[in-house]
Image (tube, rainbow, N blue to C red; front, side, top):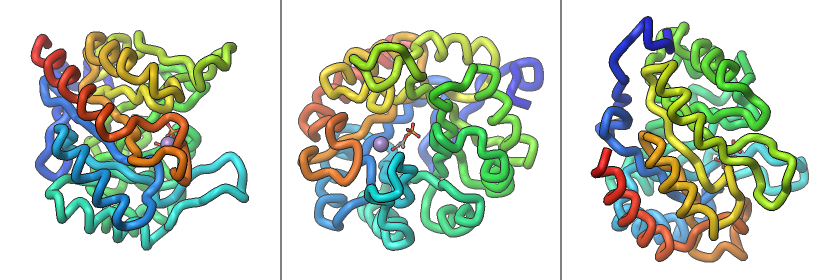
Amino acid sequence: LASLEAHPEPSIIDVSGVKIGKGHLGMIAGPCSVEDRDRMFRIAESVCESGANLFRGGAYKPRTSPYAFQGLGEAGLKLLREVGDKFNVPVVTEVTDPRLVELVAEHADMLQVGARNMQNFALLTEVGKSQRPVLLKRGMSATINDLLMCAEYILSQGNMNVVLCERGVKGFDNVTRNLFDVAAVPVLHGLTHLPVIVDPSHATGRPDLIPACALAGLAAGADGVHIEVHDCPEEAKSDGPQALLPDQYRQLAVQMKELAKLF
Ligand code: PEP
Ligand code: MN
C-alpha cells in the first residue's frame, strides 16, 4: 500500500487543514516536552509567527531512564490542545502505548510514533485504526525497508494518512547524537508515495548543525522539517541541549521557505 506501484502519484496528507506533500511544506516546531503553560504559549506564538504550520510537544515521553521526566500526560495533551486552538495551528504529539491512542487522538491533530516505538506493532495497528494522520519516525537502527513495512502496518488498518520522518540512525561517532541519513529522503521518494520529512534536531543533537541539515533535507526533496525549539534550553525538561532558540528558528524558517520555493 505504501509503494509507488500501489499509488504512483505522491500523496498529500491533510492534517486538520494543513497539507504535507507534493509541494506543501510541513513546518513542525515546538519543544521536546509539553511544559508549563506560559512557556508553551510563548514558544507557540513565536514559531507560528516564524511560519511553523504545525506545533509539537510530547506529553508522553519515551525516556531512557525511568527516573527522568516522563511527560505531563493527559494534562499535557489538554494544554497542547489549548495552544493549538489559541494559535489556530494543528498539534502533533507522541503516543507511546496502544491503550492511549484513543485519548491522544481526542486531543491531537496528528499522532507521532517515535523512533523507539517504530516497530511496536500493537501500537502501529492501533494508530492504523484511528483516522488521525500519523507521523512515523524511523527507528535508530531501522532500514528503509523496516520503516516502509511499519508504515504498511498502519495503512493496512485503513489509515492512509502517514508521513515518514528521517531522524538519524545510529552511527559510530558520537560527535553527533545520531547520523543524519539525508539520502533516505530521495531513496524513500523513489519507493513510496508517502510524504517524507526530516528531523535535524534528533538527527544531530546539536543546534549548530540543525540549519545545515534542515536545508540539506529540503535540498534532498523533504516535504517538511521537524525542529525542537525552546526559549530557555537550560530549563528544558528534555532535549534542551539540541533546542533552537525562537530567534534561531525564525532565521532558519526564512531560509527554509526560500529554499522550498526552488522545488
Ligand atoms: C521526540 O520527537 O521528542 C522524540 C523522542 O523523537 P525520536 O522518537 O525521533 O527520538
Ligand atoms: Mn525530543
